[in-house]
Each structure stands twice: as C-alpha cells, then as structure tokens.
Image 1 (cartoon, rainbow, N blue to C red):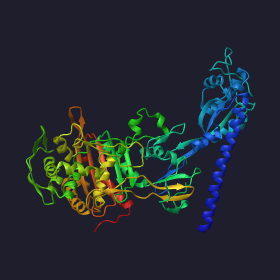
Image 2: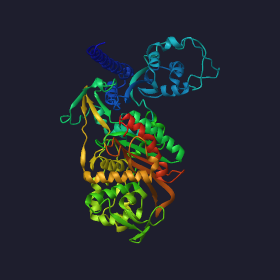
Image 3: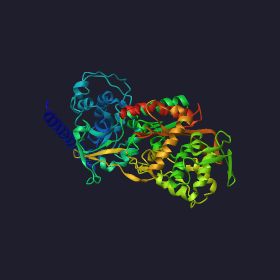
Image 4: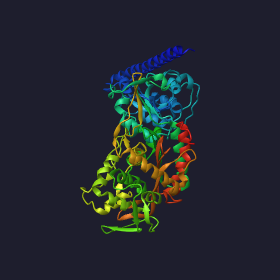
Length: 597
C-alpha cells in the first residue's frame, strides 16, 4: 500500500471509530431516556446519560514511542426501574434471570428491586456480550434452565428457588437493561503508576498527570499553543492517537528505560532489604524525565483496593522530602568553585572533628585526614573537610546560591502534588551557624529526589538549570505541538561545571568504583544520609543514594538512585552505586550513545 493510501485508510478508520463512539453514546442516552426518565412516570435526573458520558471522556496518554499508558474504554452497567415491577413474582423472575449473568446473588437483586426508586444499579463492569443478552437475548439464553425450590420458600425470600421452565421467557428489556459507561484503563498496570495517577468513578482525577492535566485531557482548557510549533502529523506519533476527545499527551518517558529502572529497583529492594526506593533518569540538556520509578507502587486500575491512600498514591520522587546527605557535597563545592572561594588546587586541614555552636561534627569514618585537596574531600566524602570549604565560602554566598539550584522551592514539574523541600536561611527563625555547617554536607536541609537530580543535572548541563517536565508534546484536534524546554537560569558558570565534573569523575573512581562502567567515564557522588527523628538521628537507619551522569564530558542522562533504610549495608557506595553500573549501559544503548574509545 502506498503512503498516501495508508494515510487515507487510517483517516477513514478514525472517522469510523469516532462515528461509532457517537452512535453508542446516542443510543445509550436514548435507552436511558425511554427506560428511566419515562418509565412509571418518574422524573428524570438533571444530567442525561449522554452528558455524563461526555463529561467523563478524556484524552489518551502515550509514552514518547507511542506506547499506550492511559485511555478510555466502555463497560456496561446493569440497572432497573423497581417502579415498573407489579409484584414479587416479577421481581423473582428478574432475579433468577440475572443472577448468573451479572454474578450477583439472587437475594441481593431482590433487595434492590424492592427499593422505592426509579433506578437502581444491579451490576457494573460487564462485558458487551452480557449487556447484549440482558438488553434482548437473555430470555432466550436462559429459558431452558430449571430451578428448584422448597415448599416453604416465598417470593420475597432472598434464598428462594422455584422449579419450572420458562421463567425467563418474558422480555427483561422493559424493566432491566444495560447502558455503557466510560472507565479509565491503564494498560501497563503498576508501571508508570506514580506518573499517571488515576480517575475515580465520578470522573475526578487524583495525582500525577491525570490531576495536573485534567482540564486539558477533558478538552476544557487548551494551553497556549501559539509559541509552540506543530511538529508531526499525529499518525507519526502513535497508532492510538488522536483519541475521540482530541486532547492527548505524549510523554518524555521511554517505556524501555522505565522498564530497566523498575526492574533494577525491584531487585535492589529485594537484595538490600530496603523499605522503599526511587530512581529518576532525566535528560540534563532539556529537563525531560526519561523514567521515574518508586517502590512500592500500585495499580491505578484498582486504586480502591489500597488502604494506604496518599501514603502509596503520592509520588515519592516529587512529594517526599528527605535529608540528602553527602550527595549534597557536590552543590557545596559548586558554590565554592563558582564564587571563587576555592580552586581545584585548594588545600584544607581535616582534623576529623569540628565543633560549631555547641554541636560536634565528625567524618563518617571517625578519622582525621590531615591536609587534603578539594577533590580528595569529595572522593573521601569528608564532612569536616567540606565544612571548611563552606566556612571559606561564607554563609551569605552559600545561601545566595541555593535558590539558583532550585532548593527550597518547587521545580515546576508538570505533575500534581510536588513538595517545596525545606531549606533554612540565616533570616529563618531558629537558624544557627551549626545549621550552615550541617547544610554543607546535606544535613538540616530537605529535598525531593527530583530537586536533587535536577541540581546535579545543572552541573552536567554546563551550569544551566532546566525545569523538569514529563509532557513532550500535546495533541490538539489531530495536530501535534512540541512543548519547549524551559531554562530556569544559570546556577554556575560553564568553567566551574567542567572543573567539578572532573572532580566527580575522580570521586567515582576512588570512592564509588562499583558505579564504574566500561562504556564511558561516570561523574557522580554517593550519599549515606542519617534518618532524622525527634531529638536527633536514628542510630541504624540510613538513606543510601547515588547521583551521577554519563558520559561525563557530554552527558546523555543524569540519574538519582535512592534506597530508604537498606538492611544489607547502610552505605550508598555499596547498595546504590552498583545499581547505576547495572542500569547505565542499558540506558546509553537505548539512547544510542556510542561507547567512548
């Protein structure tokens, strides 16, 4: 078939699909009108079935390769008008006919048919085949079945069974019928769950893209498109687009990378005994999120079965703050280098212990390391050494730079329920100089995983901070519009970023060799953060993490790996760094980055 013929054929198929959907809605509205609004002289509801179905209609969501992540499907609801039943014998006949088809006990159906109401729901989530039987062919299908009953049974008894053939020979369609309704389907199940969020029965959306883009997906609000450029005919994006609603999302996420990180995260949780964890992969040049996985996840198709509520529905990557620990040392060094407070050749004395404001600070290994360079401070992850770097930088400079990296505020990612993070400044109540020293190595400051990886991605991007985003393109009435990357601002100079990158390469080589890969150099830093509790920090629990990017000189991706309360080892170098080594080669292959010589 020629390309033009394929285009015309595809267009015809879509026209037919839209027409069928419209016919289905019109038939449902007509059936509802005839059997509910007009039956028994009852007054109808204020909103028709057609209007309700249209209100619940939403556009589709696909990944960057067109894989379907969210769509509408039609299921069927069985309802009845109890006011049209003249006696208990008719109710019993209907209950007998429906119990097997709908999967509802006969007694429960009888109870519903006794209600003083013009419409009751008997069952939902039925297939089209069952709906057809109920709407016209159920009598023929069931008329030969035989039912037995005891002599004492009465028509109103929920356990009653009666004998005799032909109970279902009268048409049910006048009193019991099926109507279609929309339901949101997430074909990938638990995969992408925190990205997507979910839709409840009345059409309201919660969490993720579904909540953030609700008005757009429903066609009620179209974003500013004048500055965006239509890039491709929709057929080039996905065979699932456009939807009949005509307002669809194409994500930056790549399901192949998502599968890599989800698989590795699950294995790491199992092997380390960690309580939970998160991995985020993003493009440092654009801020596009290529993958984000958190454990535990959930299946948005069955959101109602989770009793944890927000605890599991909220995306830990953007909603849960934590003290980052030693990964934050790259930020302290970035500020010191860019402000000119130190150079790569600066030397510091590390006595192994430091007292500031009545607080005692020590190195994680409890040792004094004497004269050390800034690179050695990063590679050995020396708390006292980085505190001296902070002292040389000064509080005014340090806190002036923090917002440049996005700390203390939302990143602006297009997902619902992002947290701000928490940073105390000298102007904040109860701030002290000991807070400043703790901040230099990632204590007494809280971030989200996305804030942390975005800050490191700014270093990878030559010092420029990009706004993270999940939507790559929007589809409006069959036209595809590109969502442009947003530059937040310059965090540090390109020269400082280049110097720091080389220091981070050394830090991986000597401090986290389990993160090294054969394909290229890796720039990164491990973190082993204590978990705060009232009165101090927990004696045993830690948050083990690794942030990094590859290739170091021309990064294709930046990544954060975070494991909460691991049991096999408390150290980021031992439980988080190996995950980077596992996933990085696959990510580079998927992104078609050739190995370095």
